Image 1 (cartoon, one colour):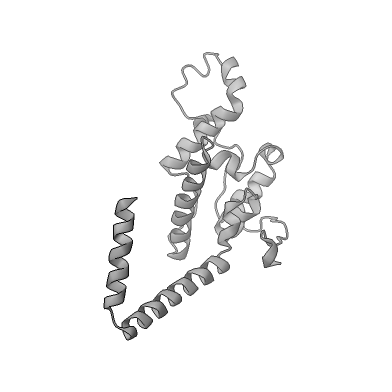
Image 2: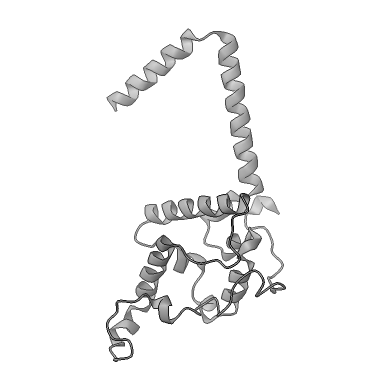
Length: 189
């Protein structure tokens, strides 16, 4: 706390030493940066990503195949995107993961680096595995057959078609019946 006060006092002292034109220039630059950030947040519907609404996942067209295949799966009746793809151990880790993954997705989409077939990265695979166990723990207690042997494999190694089907690339569902979407946030209507 003391260190923060010292830093603030130094910043105020430096601010007073700088002339008026430099202060106005700094404030104008800060205003432009904040305005651009607000504009990007508005255009990208950034606030919708805080919600658990699956429609937020298709703000970006790259997720249409995943949304369409999920919508026709058995999981659509009991789980949303965040139920499988976001950690549930704490609110902090949930939103940290959403922010980290969202920044990666938006950077890839903006720079046109998205792959034809979307595959989970190692961090996501770990989260998906933990969520399979969280929801299906009762089934795992009963699964002792030699078919499964030891549980050293990830659930999606055998159940890779759940819930997105066998193929889920951009070309596998070019005319996916994605519902007419209304804005997720009330002020976007």
